[in-house]
Length: 265
Image 1 (cartoon, one colour):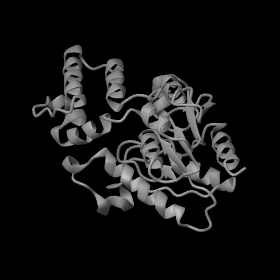
Image 2 (spheres, one colour):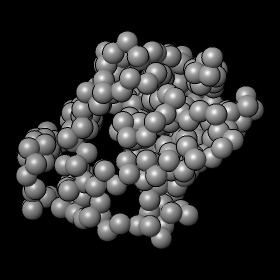
Image 3 (cartoon, helix red, strand yellow):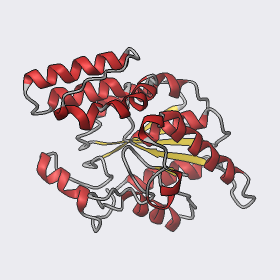
């Protein structure tokens, strides 16, 4: 079962202004190796639009419960020999939490964060070209949210990140430490990390690996965040996010297929 990443992402790994077909290609390539998959539009996106939750009522746990329901659906399909969750980016944490509640044969974390989301956002702010005064305000708001306290007055320039209606969701997301949650599992885990991922760097994968001996690693040379081969140069790397014709990075499918098929031996 393939779980999409952050934002309004559909089952193919696309958003309205960012079509790359990453998850669609992943499903197709796994099928070529005899591995069936289910992927679904996130709540409120595409065919799941009717299930939209008002933003102020949205919580991270809702996405986890959705994943659990889909996993239980698959677990009851008699032709499925073993169930493996594959989460991309934010979906890696969703999959980790769902695997604590549903019996699965394994978990694959692709480009998953190794720190709380609050720390991830803080690191992204530090790397941004945001004016220093505005960045300081953003970091202050982030700290308040990390402590579980809402901020009613947010500068308009920071509304995309911290508007009051999204704050309950952010706080519900910030409470999870991916390494701690991964350590709760006993099922085999494969952490897949691209060396040219500019959104989630390799230190995140190393932190996830420290969760325990049940976690193994697969490094994919030159793979970026949307599973394509890309240079480290920023503009060229991000240009791949809107090119659905690019194939998946070499070595990705082989690593995942090998892990999944070995679970049955």
